[in-house]
Image (cartoon, rainbow over all chains, first blue to last red; front, side):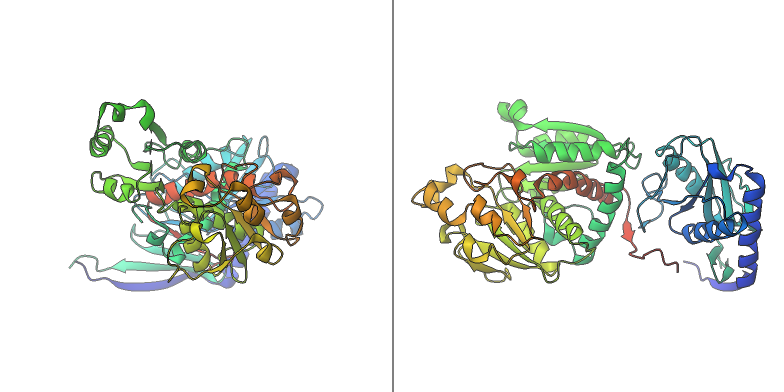
Length: 181
Length: 316
């Protein structure tokens, strides 16, 4: 149907990712005066390592307070089952009742916002948080829902069909070009 | 995977994948409000032409916990009594809008037939002596998780005790257990064994005493009294003396060994011991796990193409 040639470019390197994670951790501490209310929740699967790193960094910034770390699996809450395969990783693990807490929800890439919508619904099944804040490594635009991040590692303008990959080693955008011929 | 008619429809990878998805469902079932919106807007029809309480309730509970609508059909209170054919029944229900049929029928192969008359997914909830795939999946889940395994029964020996010949549970279990790497030994009088065990990959034993002290799982099948005559067993007492689980035999089980039973239990027939007094009994856990496994099966069939990545938090 169409021939695609791809061009890949590294947007952030390993040290950039490191710096972004430190900065976001500081922002979280700054913004939440009472850290003892905060729970860090990574979204399966892309957000869990970022959540773990933020959790570590926050522990270094304010060692006196231990902030719980959890993970949420949203595969049962998606509204687009028919559109994409379901990838299961590990089950949801929310260590505390979220009622009255401030949840910092963590994901790697913010795109259409549908995953975040699903995650918000999933969180509600574990209590009623006082507030939910959203931290992402990359905001690549193309929102389909009224969702915005509170903490962003890097804003990257992308084409809708580009692929953004995020890992501890860096952030790469693979541009899908020459889509039609 | 479009239907689940037999365990043989599943590759070993698919079995492992369903067990992994079952972990997710078990987490949901452990919540204060065990319900997710995964199958909102779908309709599951449970169509039972043969009596069953636990399997039907288990499937209906599973469907409800995934937010699916449930249609219940029981042959005893339906137009089947007015002479409606199986085909007409299925086509009528399909016309009402059904995404999946959960079918139990006394005739082997009925679910395969039904598949031809509907576009909906068909799940076999037990057909004659043939297959009961979700029972085998819940049994495999119960065994692997009790032994802290994710995807294998390697090195484990399971004794399946009772009327193997007439048991769809045994057929399904043997297939799944052996493919997951377990050794299976069938413990039954000759009349309760199939005429040929070629290709089954199992061994046999003549009495429960021969194996009770060495196996990792004791799987007791229900003995139907009405089949006793047909099996030419001289008496229930003789059967019990060799094959029933008595308190004395239960006491000889290995410390880590599990006791399983698909239910309903026939107390005083195959189970002379009170199962609640056997430390290794996981019979009620099987019932609990049954809901999670059936949620995983329904979600696999109706929730899109599921793929499972078995990564332990490691990020690609």
